[in-house]
Figure 1 (cartoon, each protein chain N blue to C red):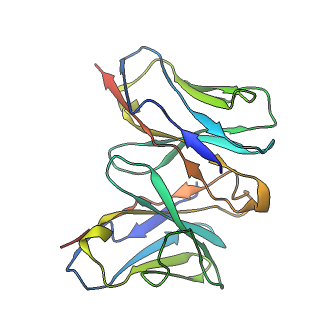
Figure 2: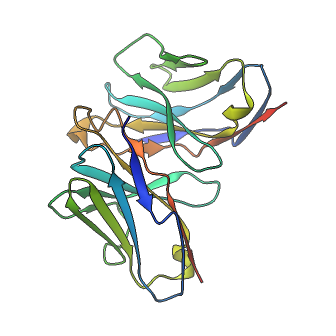
Length: 116
Length: 118
């Protein structure tokens, strides 16, 4: 079964510093999508970044970048120049490609605290 | 951008009553919507896939007679929690994909509905 694991329940970072959130997943598929979602206190899920497994280049979105290691099945999120607004729960997620069902499989989440 | 709304945002009901939660895609049509459940400080668990014009597909362990899903139009899916009990208290979230985007690469989430059953 496909699983997504986030081993860091909580992380903290000083404002303006850099933090990396870890995510590993288990799948036998070769093509799939990986995501990082942010859930602030409002509980609204916001897509942070998306990675297609067949692309070797790591995705980046402004201050957010990923380190995608396909062989190791690792997908970490790096947040640079952390801001107070980055404080939220972050979820790593995976979509299996077969059947194109769109079913997202989420990790347990990592709560990020940003200290001023 | 694509917007998904949910109504109500918060509902309190008595044990034994039924509650309906609406999920609407405001500026796009969605043939497929998803319903998730989230307990405090926990992850999202997929409950069911809502398909316009057909029966919903429920995940293993989700009682389809308890959580009734209706996707009667391309912009509206409803989740009805029947005979609600305190253990049904949770945060319910829906998601949908806009046309032109694959459901495997883009989903937009509603703001969620907090259900409290007394």
